[in-house]
Amino acid sequence: MGDLDVDVALVGGGLANGIIARWLTEMRPDVSLVLVEAGDRLGGNHTWSFHGTDVDAEAHRLLAPMVSASWPAQEVRFPGFRRELSTSYHSIGSDRFHDHLMMELGDKAVFGKAANVGPDAVGLDDGRRITARCVIDGRGWLGGAADQVAVAYQKFVGLEIETSEPHGIRQPVLMDALVEQFGDFRFFYLLPLTSTRILVEDTYYSDDATLASPDVVSRIHDYIEAQGWRVSSLVRQEQGVLPIVLAGPITPFQAHDGEPARAGVRAGLFHPLTGYSLADAVRLAARITALDALTTASVRTLSNSLAAELWEARSYYRMLNRLLFVGAKGEERRAVMARFYTLSQGIVERLYSGQTTALDKMRILTGKPPFPIRRALPVLPASAGWAHATSGTPQAKV
Image 1 (cartoon, rainbow, N blue to C red):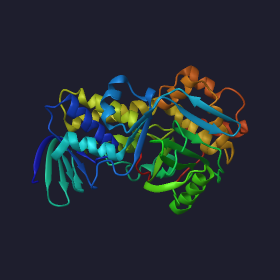
Image 2 (cartoon, rainbow, N blue to C red; image 1 turned 135 degrees about the horizontal axis):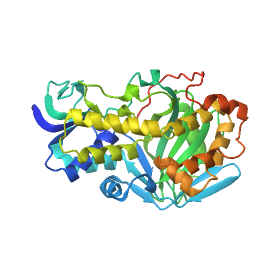
Image 3 (cartoon, rainbow, N blue to C red; image 1 turned 180 degrees about the horizontal axis):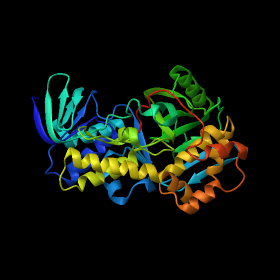
Image 4 (cartoon, rainbow, N blue to C red; image 1 turned 30 degrees about the horizontal axis):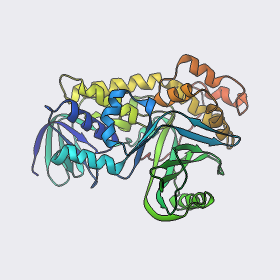
């Protein structure tokens, strides 16, 4: 393939740009586009999941070809109680993501590392050049952003295994917190993909981004053994680190004049509490598709505006993060999460979808906290004189 000239160049073949490509292909077939990926597969090696209430019916329709598995319910496990929630749950595996987009895009998927990305052109390191009226950069977490916002992390290692006998898990277990905590809020995340195939993730809500993979893998095998599962084969391993923002401005995520537009985590479009970005990627894709004129400037303005709007609306979630990471200590973090899951299913659904109401906010904070209130008060305002600086680079599964 030589040089190209297109309407839209999407740089980075991850979740956010993949969703934009899917939306444009379906809704705007008149728009010529390319999706540029530095690796050899779109989506890398990840699993993305979402609750049925996170997106609307039209988004469900458009996402459906990329969904690997769906379940009508989910559950959580904490010391003292287990709970089933009748909220549907859906997962997109990177293999399905890659296969469907390749079927739709064909040679519109371009594999090669972007050496330089500007507002009207993308240069690949092999010398190829792509000119475009609209360039969207969706290459993940922007280096240096963590220097301007206070960040904690959700980090995980997952093993997808095939068991010799049915594992017995009928629905996703979003949190099995009946495990040793090791100083963080730790839980296992279980996705039963078939009766004998299951994704087992060891997850930590942590102050730092360090992920000692060999140690975590060993703990996963200990957990698998404790469940009585016999592994017949290891299908794959994945890992990642997601940003959990405690305080700070949207400023480092905003694209400036003379820069390409941004999408996904690079644009600050992710849920502050979970680090997940699928619902925001859907929101952005829908708005981009509705634009009359697809230019870098128009999409940059749209993306910046959406990100700023959501960042402001989600200040409450960042305050909850401060309570969890700064107010609560050690085992108290698990108690905070356990208390949340005793609330109504509607409150849980609206929090995950980013639609928490004023009444929900009051209810979440009502009652005796699982840690001394004197520790909570200083961290409630974002302008409080506390520091929570961490280092590291959040990675994919967003």
